[in-house]
Image (tube, rainbow, N blue to C red):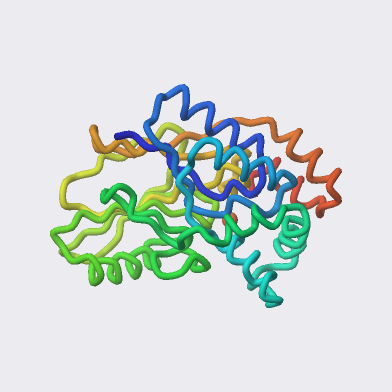
Length: 254
Ligand SMILES: [Fe+2]
């Protein structure tokens, strides 16, 4: 079984299309999104339509939780730029679309084989940015799913690709920065967490749409960084009246 795993689409239709085209070219068996289908860019309706048409299995990110907060008349816990885009998203999406997004699960155990989380295993809002934060997440996961279970997790939220391997004896985490084409072997009995980056607003310094192929037959994860038509995404962000910084940051991958 081969999965294309991506995250943080953030209403960027061109980034999502680039990832789906590459996933189709590779002939993967299933599609998975680790949350944040919406927010930041101008195409929330088209992105939700495409995700649902293509049968992408999805979990709820902090931006989908933000829609629920607005429903409940609570102020979502996010920065002013994100909040302005979320209000645009809320007003643009039909109610049935918002209901679908809010109803997504916070985490998934996919086909009994691996986990999908948005931020951390315990909280979609929590960032895993380094080996210390990853080690904490692994320790809580090994309490919940004790060895000999092989823990394999895919996450998003930071919008930066990364690979973390947990050594069960030293209880330390080895972190590896990820570039386009990098492949990581999944060794039996070992524990891994892979951040698949973002197909809509990558922040690792590259204007790319990223995703990972998870191959459970050959047991590896391989990362892809794709160019996409970001000029169109930027034009639509500006035409929608969203903050210009949301367009400009796409050019520099921040
Ligand atoms: Fe996000």
